[in-house]
Amino acid sequence: MRLNRRQRVLIGLGVSLLFLAAVCAAGILSGEAAMATDFSRKNTAPCVKYLFGTDWLGRDMLARTLKGLSLSILIGLLAAAVSAVLALVLGIVSATMGKAVDAAVTFCIDLVMGVPHILLLLLISVALGKGLRGVIVGVALTHWPSLARLIRAEVIQLKESPYIRIAEKLGKSKWYIARKHLLPHLLPQFVVGLVLLFPHAILHESSITFLGFGLSTEQPAIGIVLSEAMKYLVTGEWWLALFPGLLLVIVVILFYVAGESLQKLMNPGSVHE
Amino acid sequence: MDRRIPVLIGKNIVRAMLLVFAVSIVTFWLMKASPMDPLQTNVGQAALGSMSREQIEKLEEYWGVNTPPAEQYLSWAKDFVRGDMGTSLLYRQPVAKVIGAKLANSLFLMIFAWLVSGLLGFVLGVIAGMNRGKWIDKLIKGYCLVISSTPAFWLALLLLMIFGVGLRWFPIGLSVPIGVEAGGVTFLDRVYHAVLPALTLSITGVSNIALHTREKMIDICGSDYMLFARMRGETGWRLFKNYGFRNVLLPAITLHFAAISEIFGGSVLVEQVFSYPGLGQAAVAAGLGSDMPLLMAVTIVSALFVFGGNMIANILYGVVDPRIRRGGASK
Image 1 (cartoon, chains in turn purple, blue):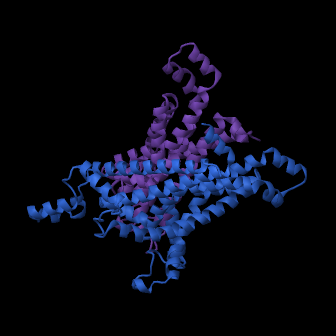
Image 2 (tube, rainbow over the protein chains, first blue to last red; image 1 turned 90 degrees about the vertical axis):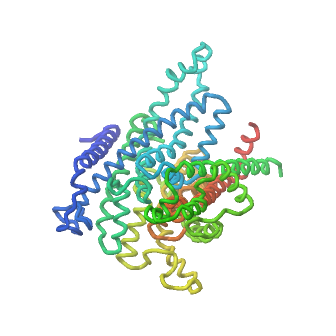
């Protein structure tokens, strides 16, 4: 059976979303197993029973990895969603509210882009007292600029289009134009931008927790699992860092695949560009 | 020469100064908003309990607990402009000195990684763009996808596991050999210790520039002059050398100057894994220990680098591409 491109993209999207959902579900279900210690089985290399091996406290690394990934995915989703909404609002406001507002928003964009993300995340996390809240707010506040820029450019272009000009001449209010004419046009780009923010958000979330800002060791986010593994690297327990990281990379790739598939579905012309 | 270029440069410098100023205020405000008590994090609950009232007051003065924020910022800014960055609370040394030593270590890494990732990314991007849709394009695209999905710190761990712990080719950390006096460290020692961190940074930096170059190359391949050259029978290297190279070089270079921020961010993570005493590690230590003067200085230095890179990108575009120069003048 030969599938056409659209069908192939749909299958890719479905499979990646299914896998991500499965990781989340497994992580939430394996909450207990991720914390259970058992010294009789500590430092087991990967085998059939413990696919990812166990750590120095005898905790099952597979359960810990899944738990950590599900936590990271959920944090990433939340932060990216907040960030994308921020980008949408600021992008539209900047393009429609006049020169002064535009200059202010552009200045903010340059400001956030001017400090390396990790450093800014670190600062925000310190400001909020190194907790779950700090990580979410930090990721949300650092990821909006590029999408906001994109939306701003799109709105500026849209504003010049005839049907919006005519709507203005007809005396429609700004709010009406934004709701009826701008938003429907921006929606596909917004959704794609949102999905493409996820992988970035998850990468940064794992990085900041890896550095020791953010969650406590009782909440084994993937960054914490890996930073703990780093201490045992030299003694030869390679599986502690290898498998959790590998799964993290796969999760991020799948988010990219999902985002790009969505882009192809919503904007079929982009495939040929 | 016309006067537009100096004006362009001047505008960019003023803008960058304003942004750096804003960065310093935001950083200061964030540090002040932190609920972490510098005394508790650095002295410890137990030690505080056994201290007398006077001792605690002295410590509070040292860590600046009771001074009003605005006053603190102003006095800090005044000193900073004069070149005095204050004293690092963790290292108990002038911040300028700490930053100078760390920056030298970091620059070593970052310049190497910046050059290698730029060259490699450019070449890969051009190859992918010229052979669009063929297997090599797919391979490079796949490689870029995997690399951009890989957290820098995990790649560092992986290389450390393979080349440091497994094969024992490279040391597993620090920038100098352990147990050797500062005078006895040779330049080669430093290079030897910087290989793995620099390699990690170079690998992670490739994907962005490669994908960008590929896109530009595809645009160029679709242009009329390219089509015409193909019709005349030019192919492969000649086609690229005569028609592609100059057109794709400028966007690639400007993008790479703007990518300094990412290399900086990556170096924070990589230095942490390799315990490489650079700027990024200082930032993490300062953040965990609420060392405000140091963290402020690191943030501002990194912002200076990023804005400097962006400025060079803007100016380069303005100087080299006359279309943009004219577009800027007509506004």
